[in-house]
Amino acid sequence: MKSTTRSVKKQKHIALVAHDHCKSELLRWVKENKDMLAQHILYATGTTGNIISKETGLVITSLMSGPMGGDQQLGSLICEKKIDMLVFFWDPLSAVPHDPDVKALLRIAAVWNIPVAINRASARFMISSPMMSEEVDTEIPDYDAYLAERLH
Image 1 (cartoon, rainbow, N blue to C red):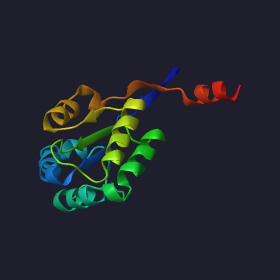
Image 2: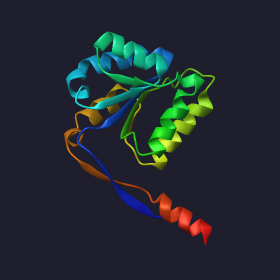
Image 3: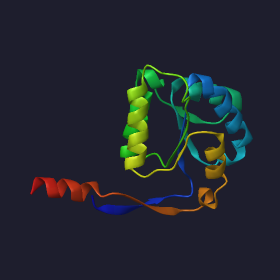
């Protein structure tokens, strides 16, 4: 597939997600990085967003709970180029009933080439990157060219 360039602004749109066993770890990470995160626009799946907002006072756009469709909502926002990065603390040792939704979300993040942190270490690297406070150009699929080719 052909690619095009997308400009990611200085103020990033960041999605925050955590499985139940990882919510406390994500909350701890958010508290440690609250000043940096406050400079950006935050989204989260339902329960995670409510916990983070209540505990930190950060403004968060809360979507549905993951199992109730929140993962799918985030995937849609990624496809619409409305999410710039995903911080998803997932539990690799516990099965979740909405595992297909989780895989779909991670697949969409890969397709649209957005940075994804899956644990404290990768989230730390990502948030401490100089790119967090810069405008950055990134390659994404050229969906318009894809459609044009399919229609001819």
